[in-house]
Length: 345
Image 1 (tube, one colour):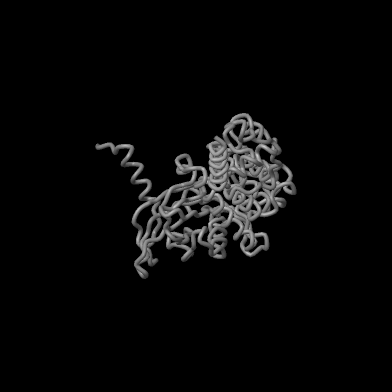
Image 2: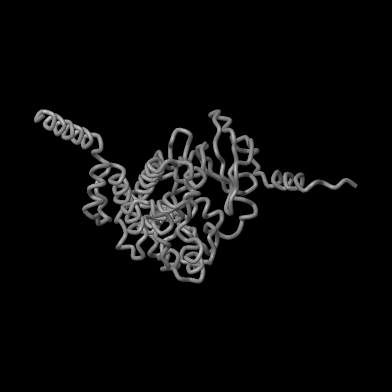
């Protein structure tokens, strides 16, 4: 009797779980990745002759609410036609009974993998594009509820896409929310499946406290601030002691201030993060656009509204923004002084 190797067994198990596409227009090519709710496959649309990403409810995730969550994600994406959000092409049920939807295949890398090698201005410009996509969703009455660097893809040409809308909530009831809305939060950092909604390391206090009714646009603004925190410090806001406090049920725990982790971070950027991540929703930026505008002001060398700067800091900002004209004027003044001095001899 010949024993199969572990790698062979794993391969056979994966193949056994592959969806039945026999009665569809799709031809399965390979598995791209999988998570708690579903598996994403590369498939060919045989009618249009293009490759798509096919997301299918994983057999292991076929527990109560999984199919509804998949339908919810497909419906949400279908109403969000924006360059920063992956478009849905098709959705339905497969012959084996599993739910699927087809979407544009995205090439690129996750933001959490790419950010450490990106210059700060590039990271901030990517963050602005994330805010734009989220602001568009908010304008359409949809909140994401699981914004984090792992759910952002950066393409080879700099395009930024906000992914994984599986726990999104339609504020106007246009798409059904997951059946677990309002369930108590489990002390875990995993994406919502069952009782968990969101990712503990990035979620707003009201969301961490299980207050589903208060988890609206301000919660997404908080999560955007948490993403900016990661882009500045290289770590999630709630790691170490802060994460332990949250896991013990302290939803109002606050993260370590960014400049305490890295003093080289500009005070104005820290001020933006701290306002976006304020404990009380009313103390945060009112919209994702307002948050994006603050970052734009910093990049343009303008005064950041959330930061009270001193005279020296104002002078530094003025010099940084108008460096070339200032240097030209200084050079002219020095040259004139030299000419005057030599003219008197």
